[in-house]
Length: 186
Image (cartoon, rainbow, N blue to C red; front, side, top):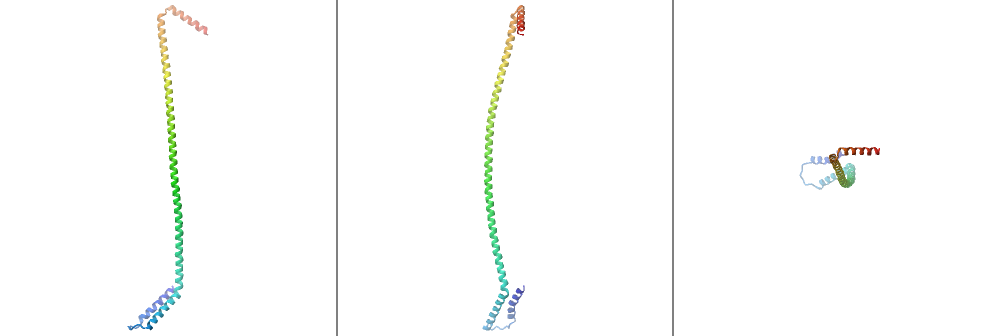
């Protein structure tokens, strides 16, 4: 702060001196120029002596600060590049991972479709075989029922005819022979 006041005083003193000077408008002589040059030289010397060191320190610290900021900015730029590269690499890996997941899902879906198709075909064959077996069984059963009914009808018809043709004596004789036959087996 003292340096600034001193510089201001040194700079303003010549101004006050010139303002207090006479109002003559004579041509400026060598003496006048010499004083001005001397004044300027004194000003430069005083500025160098009092302001030089703080100005050099300020400029040096400012230079260091700027260089430090540039280094930090370069380091931040390098870190940002590395981070960007890592993110891009992770995105590539994620893209590959997504592609792998989609491929896996597609292949498992196709495998499941094939399995279900094969299972459907096996079930269709099994159902057809079961239906054929059921049809064969029902056909056989129907034949047996029809045969049994036919046999029953034939027996009834034969029995009716025999009853109509047999006389009472023949029926009694037939009955006795049947009883003897049954007793002989026991």
